Length: 154
Image 1: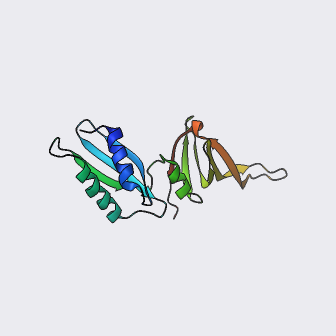
Image 2 (image 1 turned 60 degrees about the horizontal axis):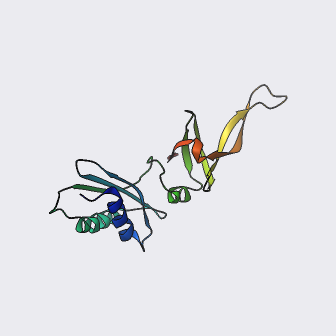
Image 3 (image 1 turned 120 degrees about the vertical axis):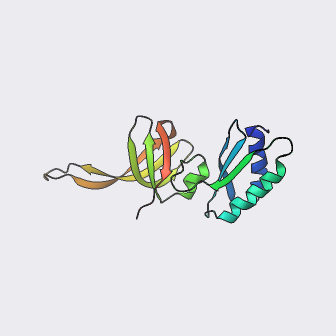
């Protein structure tokens, strides 16, 4: 069986010239290969099928059999690559922090060091008994982030 790095290189070569990008690759000891892809424009089943066929043709089943699964990194799949942050600008996200905390808000921006989300907080307003809800922007460094996922708001 080819190494994870070799399989990753094959996938990235296949994806060159398309709007698709590799999000995650999992190769298990029992020869199960899971490929997760996405696109800034969204992804459809045909894209997954096409990549699956092309990748299957590049891997040698005669040498060693394997199970291949290609799917989209759908809603709720943790962000792994920069393109996922780009795709979800303006969308609602959930951020799990290394310290166990959790934030929800709108993804406003991202950089090489972290992200900025706009979330709602209850704050005490002078002269009022009840706390008011205000929108605040929070800058969060990637070192403080355990996981980021997009969330669906109905």
